[in-house]
Length: 100
Image (cartoon, rainbow, N blue to C red; front, side, top):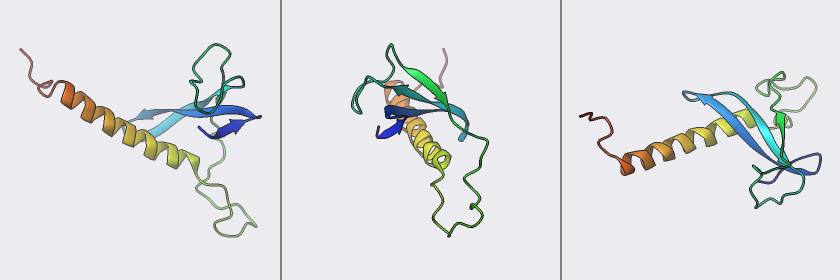
């Protein structure tokens, strides 16, 4: 990940219901690098800020100059991850729907 919070490497973790991002946090680790597992002792967790919507333009700002909507990006990545997981489950046990 290339995201940082207070100069510490951070990665987003989102909770999803169906295809919607319903919550999440940043996993932050000041002693780890961008290519290391951040889920280790010394990690801290920072809530994702949901109180300000990135869907609406900010008053007085030029169109397109507002920060990108990260929740949308995280949702797209989360949906792709769920799709990939469903394909992996299907190849592991293609007859999972058939009960004996």
